[in-house]
Length: 340
Image (tube, rainbow, N blue to C red):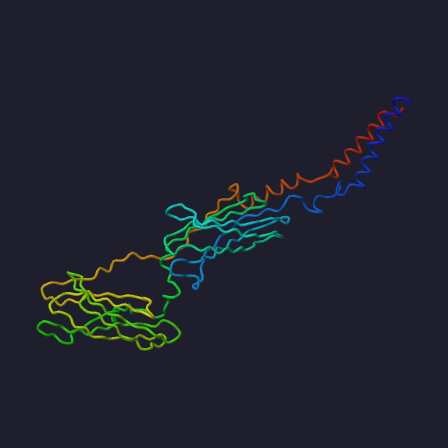
């Protein structure tokens, strides 16, 4: 066999091998867009919302609902989990953790995922969310909640409270009888029912404390009649105390031994000296700070989508249409060149 015949046979062999690959190996010449890329789709955290149900507020703890919205696009993404970590805002110690198995994300859109975490009803916490795919961290974010002590436990919740109108103060008194050594006071507390049902089983305890010594001079409790929805009622009682002293008058609204609210005023019976109630209080409220997105690489959604498309377009298996065509053309040219 001469040299030209051997080269021609080799060229034919290359062509045969290429054709056999096209016929026997699935996807060798397939368009990458037909079956989709092998690489899983992209996913990222969009936002995290933190809330609570009133029934989940207890004396020492509260259960917070952490809802995280995960944006997904491209091919299905399997083995997705969301890890939630609660860190004390003051000490930096981890309070609790929760892992949610998201499963497989399909299609383009957002998927809400909820995790419930129980923490102490005090101070504030940093709630961190981490998105994993096959145990690989792909995105993260965080929110901070503060003022949990402002949440009212279920057992202490009531629609009735002391009135806060200037014309109708929550607590007042008048002198019913002024003796030489003793003074009888008529005490009154104004209560408003802001609910939709009549109030039940309420009582008010009045406490008079001598201002200089802080000694309790009198204490009395009276039951509160049912207050209709949207109405304001006045509860009264009498108390006798030593004359010509100044007193702090406290009123405690209670139901079945649970304190629902308090009010305070000053009763000045000393004509030479007056006292006042310090009404300066630091307001505490439950609040959630803005969502902080860490991002796996700090990329925007557009940048991530562009990178994802570039990565998937270069990760296709097989030769591809162009590669097979180049192989056939090279083999044909080689055979033609060595023909006699």
